[in-house]
Image (cartoon, rainbow, N blue to C red; front, side, top):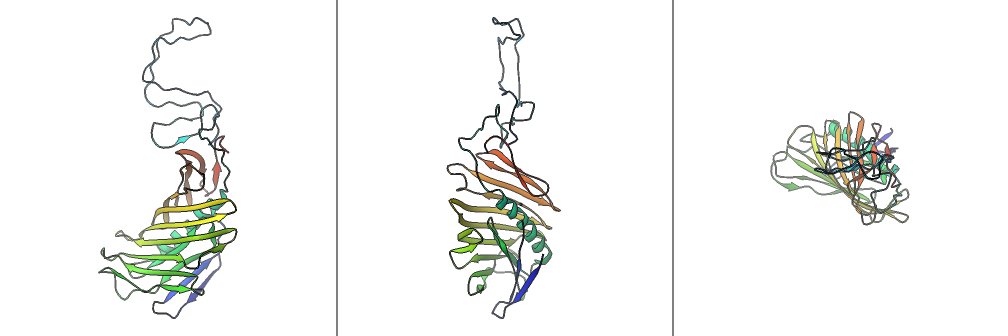
Length: 289
């Protein structure tokens, strides 16, 4: 991956690194399973009038032969008897989320390697915005953060992108907020009307939190994003809310990367509709596609 660095002569010296990255429910064919606290007077066999079969009692969660059950909490996996549990047929571009997962792994590694109490580091990335991934590395602070304060913002590329460092007032913690300053901003086929990312150091060494807020369109599709995640020693986990992606339905991407091995799933109304494979790709599951 080629990296170009640009050193700016401004009040707060920064280095900007651009990286061009290429980033990427099984259906249930079994019979539906019903779980009840107890069933009395049940009949068995093939006789029409029933038989003398003993009553059956089932406790806890149960599932079909292909594991399409839940334990009563969280998301379901699969569907009942091959029927989509949602009232919508899904049609979305999963590749943009695959790219974003790969982007997050890249920036997590870079931030873990470069950031320290005296060296704030941030990034600018979101679903659809990965062709010119921005890694902002501020010049070292004169001293570790103590009192709450905000430094002057720094903008580059004719004021197109900006970032600002702040001391939070919580020990030596700092935050670096990056944003797209000229709106609308075009990134490939995506048009952004909003994009901002905040990276904050936390008390534990090598640990950071981040928040992403963006709004973009690609053709008729709207990609509104609100994400919260954490970084520790190059690994990351994130929860990405995608409220406009499936109209009228809550869509959430839950993803993590540990030493380059990924996991997670995409949920619509708490139903898992795609899984994050170990290589970071998303695989649709279920008959809702």
